[in-house]
Length: 250
Image: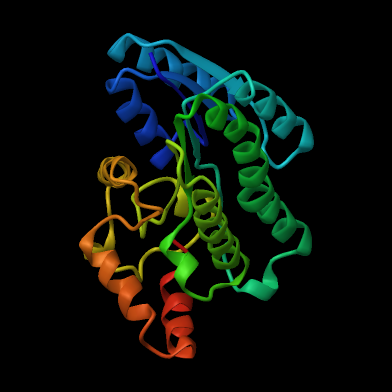
């Protein structure tokens, strides 16, 4: 039975990955900060899919939490999904430096450390995969959130290039607006986001797994967002930044 470790696994895209992978027969290691939600999610997955589910309570913005997950990854995992993340409400300059550093810790340092913890074992076995959840925001200019997600994309592509010739894959997943708790928890106003731009988490995961299977290094789910990303590369960057600022971060 293959195994998968998912961070931010109790809601949204992380929970959708857990459902999909459990249905595919993976044993799971679920990582999040809320032990009660973790336990509930694990029990639900065990009952529904009959798979082994391990819970690991960890705050990935702390060294202690990262140390715990790194240690578990070094024991051997076939698929790592680095999904944990958060956003900030309001204008960029209204966010405290401490909160910005916390975001970089989670979006960049955690992704790097957990990826580097799991890849040596995967390379030794010559099999495995890492999915780093970024965002369409990575292709636009919108403060630290966009910058951190751009780093995730670049890092994932770089690691994928390093692993050419092996059966180990690394992919950045770049969803657009997804109906999850993300915006509500960040107190981000979503009223200006057109309804047609919203995606379901399950559809995002379905396309991500398909893209991983065919060896893509960057997955942008849904044709609508492929067009948006393509157009964003053609229009002046200042104009793209204005549109991005109005619509939000993810």
